[in-house]
Structures are given as structure tokens and as C-alpha cells.
Image 1 (cartoon, protein in one colour):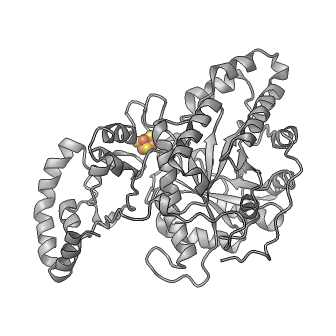
Image 2 (spheres, helix red, strand yellow; image 1 turned 180 degrees about the vertical axis):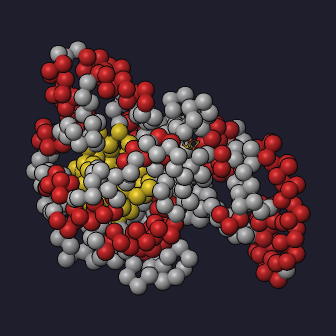
Image 3 (tube, helix red, strand yellow; image 1 turned 90 degrees about the vertical axis):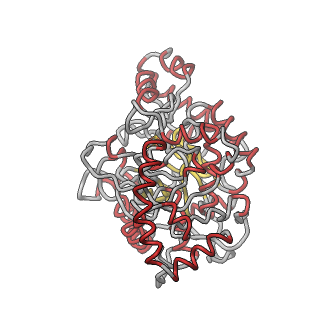
Length: 468
Ligand code: SF4
């Protein structure tokens, strides 16, 4: 905190009525100046300086630390393709400012109680919590293999910490109030993968609660889960409540996501929440685990011990910013990172090079999203309608070049070749196998076997490492 903000804070605590009055006078002036010039949304905690003078509250997901994975190849927003992504503009504009480095710093979570008030007065008095000198990723201590303590002691964490190449896949909770079929399906994956990702209202559509589905799988199968939680449908109160509930049901790995916008699903009329974004969600889980308190500071009797994950959109524009967004997540507290689907190996190599140059790859465990393409038409549809996922033309031609009856095995052959390449790439700790046609054509066991990954390693014992 700067010397001036310390003085401002002290004066505010002594003369709050004066600053409240000043805020009431200044906020209409501020709105009149900043709305037409910067498209200001009067959040009351201005970060324009660090975003290339682009108001991040223009983003329909209220993201404060960089773009989501839905940015189109042309830089368009996933919610409205006729508009340019706010963060695409911010990254471009900020590179032209003398203070370009500020976009790489982590902005604090939005304090919604300040909405509509004067950001000038809030900055003067330190009410904006704008201490952006928080730890950057370079200062984060990354626990090396073999080092104590464990974060959660989960099987997934132990395998990664032992340096094993981990295999995970996605399981989508069903449109059913009965878990029997989900459990039967999950059992077919026992011994095939090291952990299963449980999606959270996949494709922005309601299904059985991911938290409940993960709890059922934890309790009724041999599988371990990685619970996905998005900021789309919850505010920070229910997020914290759900985390405690998930932990009580046996979940030890959690993947913090922003989530697709409701306009992409089948309930377009739903109100998006986005109280926090994934960056702040990560720090919230870390605080609960490491400090044993809720965000408010209230003590948690038994804090949840989670192995915390985040996502990275490796092939989505603006690609030069993606390693920096991952660095921010590492600074926020992730222990592992999972990518969106990757088909373009050149773009993957480019990302790994940038991430290596930045020095972040040794600070986390990176899992790459892979999947088998069912055929050339599906590939073209994904290229057209799945933002952030790029399928090279040569791959589409290869699929089109085989008779329709052989396309399924050709799709599997392609992904197996890619997995074999990934196993040789430094910085990649494992894969997450995703399904192109959710649960209707699920080739995970075949992919695992053909890639030579079917003998899953045994888990290093927990006794020789302390659980924090
Ligand atoms: S593409 Fe994503 S980050 Fe960009 S403005 Fe739209 S919702 Fe926000």
C-alpha cells in the first residue's frame, strides 16, 4: 500500500462522512467524463490504467484479469459475435501504453458494494482494495515432487507430484434425478484413468448438480473426481458452501472455472451471476484451505484441503496473452492447470515456448485437453462454432480421405499420435480426454490402450508425506 493511500485510509476512518459527501458530489462528474470516453460502468474500483484504458466491466462475464477462452479467431466476443472482445481490445491497447506491464498484474475481486460510487474517492481512501502489489507468480513457492506438505493428499495430486504422466477424462452429470446410470458408466472407467473431471452444467445447460454427482462417484466407485465449479451460476456465498459440502462428500480436487455464458446454452433468459471470476475463485479456495477462513475472515471449523486447478485456453486469441493469464492463475494459487481441447500441435508448441520463456511451466502441472474427432464434418463444425478450438485443415483432409466406416478409428489414431507427441514434450504432466459427442461415443478406454497408457501407475503411499 502506498504512503498516500495509507494517509487516505486514516483520514477516511476519521472523517467518513466527509468522504461519503465528496463521493456523492464527484460520482456524477466522474460518470459524465468516463462513460462517454471509456464506456465506464461505474464499478467504483477503476482499473482502466492496467487495461489499456478499456473498461473491463464491458465484458459480459465481468472478467478483471484477462480474456475467457471464448474469444473468436477474429477477436470477437463469445456472447455477441458482432462485438470485439473487451479483453482483446485491452491487450492490444495496453501494449501501446508506457505502462504496458500493468496488464500482467493481478487485479482484486470486484467489491459490488462499491458499484455506482466514485472510484476517485475510493482510490483516495483505499476503499477500492486496490493493492496490486500482491504476490506475482515468480514469488509463488511451487512444491516440488517429494517435497512436503501435500495440499490434499488426493491420488491425483500424489501421482502428479511423483512425476507420473496422468490420464483423466470427462464425465458429464446426466439429465436425471437418479444416479444409477451415471454410477454404472463411471465404473467402466475404474482402472482406465487416474481421475475423472465432473463438469458443471456442461454447455451452460442444467444437468444433475456436479457437486452431487462427484459425491456419488466418490462414495460408490473406486474413481477419484476433479470437480468443476463455475462462477456463472453462483455467488461467493454458495461457492463457499458448496466447497465445504463437496469436501465432506470426499471430493479433494477442484477445478475453478469462469464458465460459458448462459446465452450459449438452452436457458438464454437466465441471469448470469459472475460475482467472481475464476482468478478470484482460485484465491478464495486457497484462502479457505490455507488460512482456514471464509472470504469474510470468519473461521472454518474444519477447512477443506483441496488440490486446486484452473483452466487455460491455449489456442484461443489473443495467444500471446495466454501464458500471462496462466501466470496470474499460478499467482492466485492453482496447483494444476487443464487446457481446453488442443488439436493444433504447432499452436501447442508455440504456447509451451512462450510459457517456458516466461518461466511458468515449472511452477504448475499442466494437463492438455485431447479428443477423437468423429469425422470431417464434426471437425468443421467445431472450427466454426467452438471458440478457442482450432483444427488444422490437414487434419480435416486426413479424416475426409478415409472411407466413412473407417473415420472413427482414424479419429482415434490421430489423437493417439498426438498423445504420444505430448508425452515427449517437457512441461506436460498429463492429458484430459474429452468427448466430442458427450457420452454417446466415448472412446476413452480405446484411446488409453492404443496410447500405451492402460497400465495405470500405483499411487505413492501417503504415509511418507505429511498432509498439511
Ligand atoms: S470473449 Fe469472453 S472475455 Fe471477451 S468480452 Fe466476451 S465474455 Fe468477456
